[in-house]
Length: 116
Image 1 (cartoon, rainbow, N blue to C red):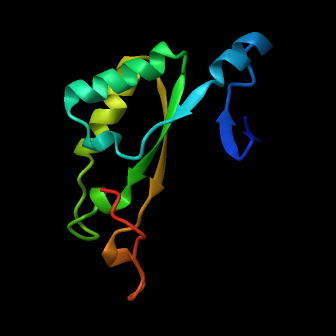
Image 2: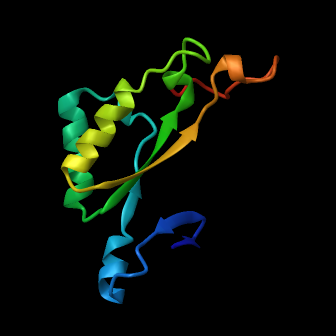
């Protein structure tokens, strides 16, 4: 079950007791550049989220990075690293696909800035 609170989406398991459900709702919207962090820096960032009591993280999955070479090429490596690190810390992941690559946009349109 999901509900919207203050413009953000909070996901929770409705089968949990209410106090546990409330605790499991706490998550953080992480930086959109987690995939750019060096391994040690990523670990520190994720440790900080978990240390703050987060049970899940939301981050931007940059489509323009995943398919930078075109519609037939896929590079999940930077995001796999983020997901593995989060899961190793008991964090659930909500990845939001964002930032379409140039080949997928209409001619003459583009991002406001580069998020890779």
